[in-house]
Length: 357
Image 1: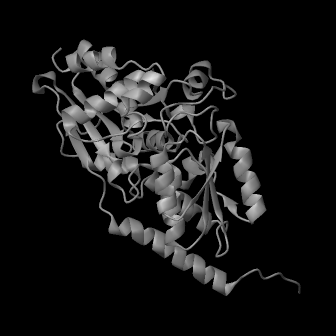
Image 2: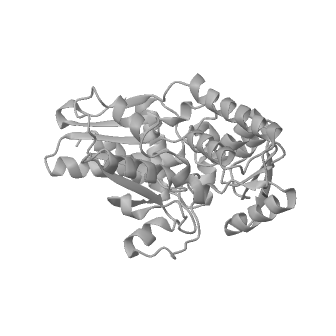
């Protein structure tokens, strides 16, 4: 009889403890809030903002990072000596740095040199190292190289985001939205609106809607310079683009986790409108939100105008992806906007008029 036993009791014990530690983080956290955006009551349409900025690391990506760590640990890819490497424009890296520190592993974020200083500082606060590259399209190759060089594991959010989360439930973001909507006037949303960065959130929500047999439609918003919108329109996964200025969403290529078949509509939002909607949301709600939230809200406004024009009532749900404090030196800075030729004035005027229509 011949056999090979690869069981390492110490490593398995470490993995079990690491999984317990990561899951304990979720157990300590309440679900994120669902805020009502103030719209005129007589419209018969309600808008809700699910506030993912209240996670311990301040963004929607906290959910993804937790799932990716559990997936890597359960698959045997992460062991006691593993260096964690990720290609990220910021928020995923912030959250992964947090979880890496939680289980005592080193973390390297590979990201474009244009990433906001605020996000770089947060990654370093959680003990991560930042490896900046001038060419945003080089982050994948560089991540593979660093993982090989360190004997580490490339988390590869852009491939594994759609499969690391249990789309059937298990308190994923889709299940949370529908649970929190249960006592609202229109508990089954007409639209759920989300951006696409990895494609993981839209994949989870789109699959869940179908699995639970809801009539809710999924709208995915895409900023300027991203490949997702053109790819979806052309039904061509090889489409490429320069890359997005709205951090956290949009990609220069179509990522493996992006599943176009579960999306009902895509909406492209100009950068100036995204940033105008970010500022307008803060003015109306008092909540300091980031640029990708502005993209979400701009698309939600567009859909609500369509609903009203068609005489429809119902509800629209979108996400607060992160807080505006991460963008003080970019989207909140008028000089930064002027240097890039971004004029918010016409968009702000249109958004302010929206509530009086």
